[in-house]
Amino acid sequence: MTVTLVSVLFVAAGLVGLGAFIVAWKRELTASLTGLPVMFAGAGTAFVGVARFGAATGAPLLGQEMAVLLGVAALSAVGLGIGLAGREGSR
Amino acid sequence: MDSLHAIGFYVSAALAGLGGVLLAFLAGHLRRGTALAITGLGLAGIYTSLSAGFAAIVVLVCYAGCALLVARPDYRTVEQATRTLWRQVGAVGAAVLLAALAYAAFRGGFAHATFYGGAFGAVSVGRLLFTHDTLATEAVGGLVLVTLVGAAAAWRRERPREEREGRR
Image: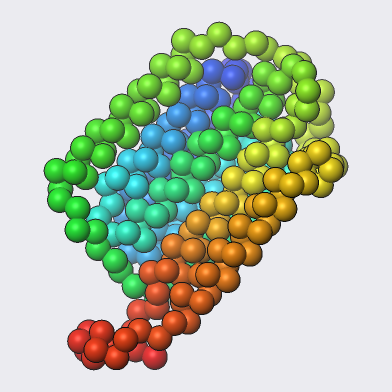
């Protein structure tokens, strides 16, 4: 059993497709917002996979750096979406 | 990559996929938050098995934050006005996207390179973030700041009186 760049990219494609499905399918906006971190997870997996298996020259850890930034961006997107949805109930 | 890392990779990928599927089909804030936490756990496992330990820790913290936000019971439910037909078209589009990406991954000719980094890589990634790509890091930091301030302001904003009374 081994892992190659192709298998990493398959997993990344699956996560991106799953995230796109969640965004398109969920009727509730805050629920469809949760598809964004899944799509970002797929993109980050592809970046880390390329950094691990395919980065021959230059900075080989650029993919890991992008994965870190994508994780932070996912948290920001969810925070902004939940904040914009607003609080339930009277204040 | 040895067998242990390979098993870890595939188990983590299955965990992330399971979390995504649960996220797509479960209802309720708490369940969706739990599913997002499972996705984050799987993603951190994927990164760890691909020798990106520092990214795994950051992603684990960020996705735990996402899960806690999604699991909150007190945010409003906003329904889309989109018809079912367009949602189905969007779902088919997601399937087409998946097929296109999988085809590109299967047919692509990728160069293979030997990886010389360590298992964790915090020093190297930190050096990249704060020296080579400082501007991008600062831009993302600014984005996070603006986002959190905007979210907090929107969260605390008082709704119009007629809207509040109309909901009772």
